[in-house]
Image (cartoon, rainbow, N blue to C red; front, side, top):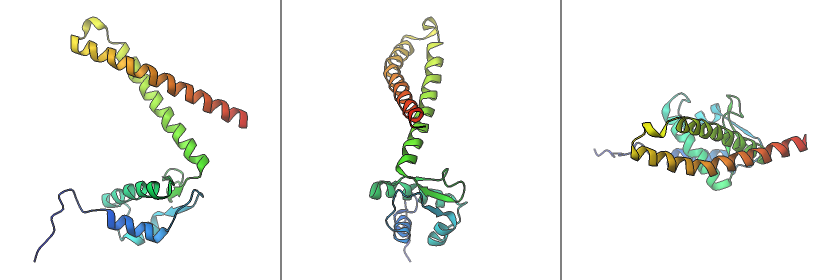
Length: 155
């Protein structure tokens, strides 16, 4: 009797293929794929870590094949929602805003450290970080302002 040894865990490909076959080509139409339906196809309880691993790979594969984003937040606990184009933009804006907030907070933390207390290596690291984040933060803030203006104009 021989057994296979999986060095990086049991492959998720076959389970992802089952989901792709069961739910067919997906579109940006707001359709919800329920957890119950996915559990039936996979034979895995949604509370198991394997379920989350397979669903992460499934979401990536759906994006690669159909350019459809799946969101659990938009389905409000029911499963995963195939986001419409408008929802994809809204989700991206939220993610960008969160990144901007974290970048801003990191910038505050780094700039509040007095240069005199830093070792030469860390002073160089601080200056490099400030040079990198300056442009990134400006682009995030500009993009956020543009999107905010478009939302206000369309309302």
